[in-house]
Length: 534
Image (cartoon, rainbow, N blue to C red):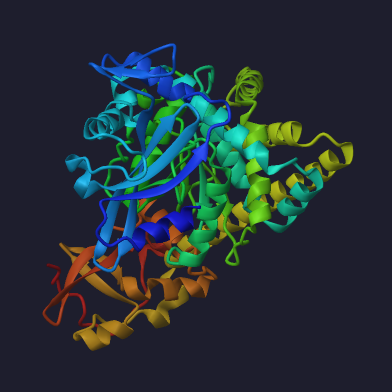
């Protein structure tokens, strides 16, 4: 449906409103969340006869704005507001161009008068999810539960959950289990009864940050299990924040309780996220509403590896499994079975973590692994009833956890070896040359000695640094982690030192000589030690 909707809007040239679809409502009543918002509003009065009064006007519908979509077209990107007009027995959806919203264009096919059309737009402004959160006109926990409950009911129409097919999917698709973990942790994070806050993030490591195909495959997995969204929101992908400055993104209030994916770009952002996790670890216990916490939503990230005490890192394979429609439906059914019992999950996790917290230092020691182990136990309990399936699941998850630990140990060892290699210039003395005089020489230069403000140092061409690390067995996927480790250990004098070459300023990595093994660098031809940084 989402692809059809996207193509339909992309093909619309000038029309301010596009009718999307209509659907019969089985129970013949308005959704609970809309009734609650309307009752809380001073503008509307719901009658016992199934009508709505607004001033002296009485109508038989309620309306809300459910989402905003950005659609790429030949003339650029166009933003559309998705609205739903609900009668007790029928729901109609329309897309309205955001540029035409203030003009309140008519809605085709409903036969509404001009004043009734105006009322639709008033309802969309007054009864929207965003405004309801901002005005705090209803209990957030009840609203989130209603969303989950509605999505679970819709998902159950897909059929029965097949345990054998589910196990087969877990064996063939390494992402199936982690995205279910993400959905469950996102749901329990904002539960009002959740006493403990996960002081870690669930991180999905892409093999190549520029791989659009791999990222699309990851998004499809998230979308399959994201039953925390509003049932009427036609999301094409999970709610995603891409942020590049040193502060965490400002979550809209309507994001509380949703599954959120964060894309941290750059070192300042990673530090801000790390600081937020540290603050959560110090809080430890749930205090106040989700919006008052350092991280209003459970942090699911798509980024390079985080330290193991801060994250459960999931390695995304280069050949990411492409979900078939049947497999996506199976994942949705699994998510529905899990989320249907969120209160029980919260209770079980609270009890288990209470037991852990009775032991000295137990809560913070290997916190990600402990949380994930508890989540896996509940997935096993909620999804699998047959003894043979539970035994197969235990063997599968034990192998997966073991492989993840081994991969983490190998990753850490490779990063440490890369740092040790860099700190021993004797191992790459053939790559150290005099300071380049021209840009042509610079392109071939890996490292060269330099003196800045009287401090002798070795300077590295950032464009060649990854190639240098390959000598230590560090692949391109871990080269950024070695750079990050060198920064966190304060080995790099400055993140980037600026040096002028042939009239052009470039930035380089630099390490003071005193940091190297034996505090020396191999001797090379003299004449390169003048102080010319700018």
